[in-house]
Image (tube, rainbow, N blue to C red; front, side, top):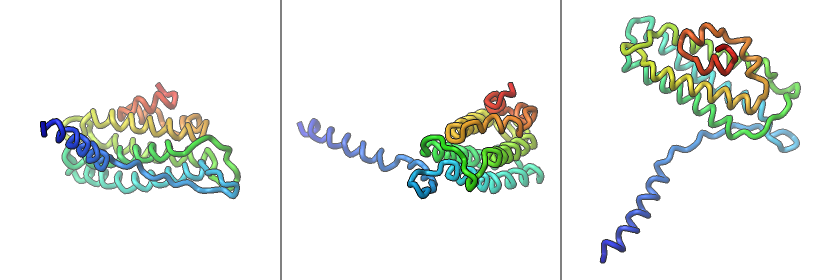
Length: 192
């Protein structure tokens, strides 16, 4: 009899513990304009700049490990997992931005945003090209996870800054993407 009263309370308490463990969504950075609406192109640029800073921090570490001959699964995969996390955080931040707006003179142009994204993707692909994919350094499953994360990120950017994928397609070398296993990204950019 006591069990029938305690069990519901136990389940209720357990449900609250799951809520406190949940991972919070990354905060987005949005810039208010004079009219009060959110400048999504500016906010998108801030998200991209944050992603660029993260990749500029992680990729040299991977390059150094590969160049020194100290690269192995145990040290490379956590760094690539951080990179995947940076793309996922950027995607979550972009998801919070609502609507497409035009790009006034004071905001970055689509071409500037595309160039920034292209540099992030190209730098990452060049690092991937240096890392032998296989059980010794980098597992193919992580490449697939990374490919999916970048694809979701690019779709998020396209949702905010319409038409950017067309610009990006001309800036990123398709052979490089395909050679490192970023097939979904290459396909999204029309390089299948």
